[in-house]
Image (tube, rainbow over all chains, first blue to last red; front, side, top):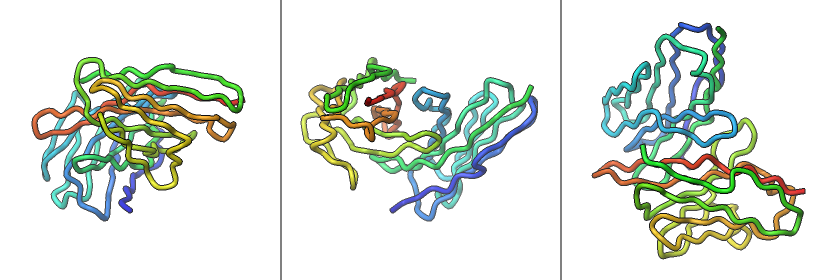
Length: 109
Length: 117
């Protein structure tokens, strides 16, 4: 079945640093979504991408839909303590979403 | 973004009892909702796709008689864990798909922590 490879698995950074994470797949997706999940909560949508090559920003977050449609990255600039959490990429077509394993982000003040 | 409400947020029950979890889309209609299960420090695992007015589609390995899904309206889907056992203890999360033109996005509920004693 379809699988996503999300990297890195975890990151420990200092407040103010930039963060980059990515997802790759052997399959083509029509949609790439990035979510953040806090402990004990459901995932919250950060950015949605629908077109190959699309680059979209949401505040300090920037994500891109890869040209090959098999990958996507998420960048966080000038990290702050509240950025702590687990970030999931999700690739999908019309119906199901396939989730990456998540990137666990820790930000030290 | 759209709002999805999930209740209860936490439930503790005795082994052998059944537990119902509700998922509601509050400000949009969702013909399709999804039920996920998440184990500690792991990703979301899709259990089933809930379609309004028709039977749910279950993923391989998910027992449909164990996890009953009902999608009776465009804003409500329910998941009933029947005859729950300790191994059913987990974090269950629903999502609802919102169609915004040609774009389909899934919005998630806050999850339900099920603990079976």
